[in-house]
Length: 294
Image 1 (cartoon, rainbow, N blue to C red):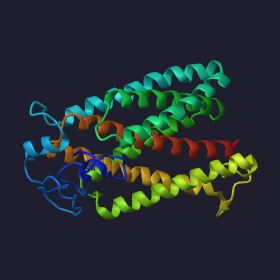
Image 2 (image 1 turned 90 degrees about the horizontal axis):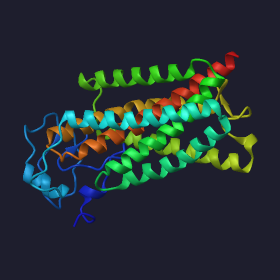
Image 3 (image 1 turned 180 degrees about the horizontal axis):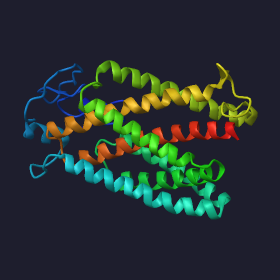
């Protein structure tokens, strides 16, 4: 019954499974099993999500308690702690043996990509797979960051600070309702993310044909004197920043609607994906300007 219900197959642009009663923009309305999710903006939420119905559509038992903000915070700390732990080991390996470290980082990137796709399409979150994703992403990021730190002094710290500041700013804008999730925002993010993916895929294809054609190489096409990929990275940063709004909205709606406790793992995974993307784009841009100054 789960595979035929749109509640379990439809997903948000951030890769989250949709939840019963979830509407973009933070609204929640009463839904019934078998109905297709209605996407509309509602300024208010009911005070409590009907637990029996939510448990039925999520396939949980009556003993399952609803998710809380503390659950989300704990799962997020655990996933990022795993990433940092494996990232530190990869950093040390790359610093002592760059060739081996980057080889391990490349393999980890491929494994993380597979795990990321698996986690995105699973109907119910798997803590083991999410922590596995965090571990392999940590190895990949640790290797790349170690290499960039050796080549360009200070760029890693700048990228970390920029990522944290961007996250804090978007959180404040979301909490003060200056920026809200909406169907329009989700459509823009979806189209933008697909366009960025096409750019990355195109670069990979032309690089395999002829490395000199790479969009990131010295012969990269330019716009206004800047390489095309710089413009794309700036757009990607904007998309990632506004994707944080959908992440925050998902968390708030899950807590308010009494979603199952396991939803905290989905929220932690979504935040990790967005923040990793944001960090990598900042790292690329800071490295470019550092190399240009040298």
